[in-house]
Length: 458
Image (cartoon, rainbow, N blue to C red; front, side, top):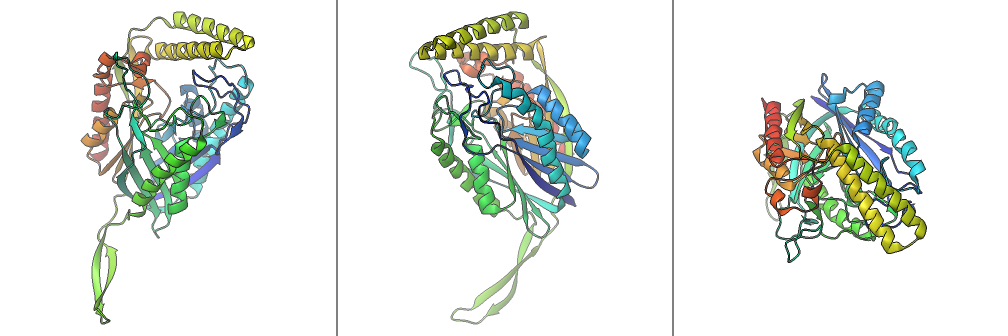
């Protein structure tokens, strides 16, 4: 039998931290907090194997931070690094990372990120110490707060917006974990949508719509909710890039209510009905009892593997670093002049140069070594990659999986850039222009994911 527990720690960044991460933003520091940021952790064991999943309100989890968290969790909680999954919600309304071009609030970045390993370990420890005998069930629904985000202008040039005819994945994937006496412990909510409702005009720290969605599930179901971002590389919100937190709350509520509805319909224990008696009344009334009709699937497994993928032939890292340094200096000079239009242009250029530098580092050497992690918890498969995968990748893995329910997530276990599907390379656009991967990487990744999931079921 499985035992499971959940824990949570507050990881809200300090007001004043460097925040204006949009190329079109002119502010630097966060001016307030819309909602708290959390690390929510799930711990599961079958008595031999121990695994943990931590959901962080973060844009990404840089590779060095990912390694530091694993080291701390192993030292303080005893979870082996390969048995820990670290997932970012990918909110764009959080703090900027250490490699920022911003000056205002930069001094708060390192202390904040240095505090995260201990805070994540605290959440995982709470989950472990609260573990109790449990059963696992799954379900799915649908929510239309997302849309393909790669439309084109009449001249064929792509931009980031709403493409109502483009590919989108609107499945709401749910894994339900209850104690053996029926008490809700955890809900895993998997959905595919960039948390970019809050855009350049927003100056508040916010988990965006995932924060509200979690809150709604917990209000209606009980227990704690983990949000696992899907293959959102080419999917965004139907209302995006704005400053009104009320919109993030409204869309998050819609997703949370659908997730709660699905969750409340799940019974992890297979049951059959039995007619006890018929009671005479105005109409004869059938009295039924639902009784167990078998044992829940209590299998627990984890697979970690590395995939070698084709990288793009990008300019040398040293060359890209020099260009980034030049544009960062231009930005700092422009800020002192105080011209808003010039500041936006300089921020955009520095932002793009930073993305190009990151891709060059990932693709350096011509081959990208990518980590793939797959977990089996009962009848559910959880596939995790450190990329911004296109939705087609997630759907292909889910459709080819032998599991009753497969949750596919990007933004997990570090960060290694955008991963478009092969057909997207001819069209271009932001994701293709910034990817470190060559055409065919997505298709190789799908095959590797299915191999890993099949291994969990052998």
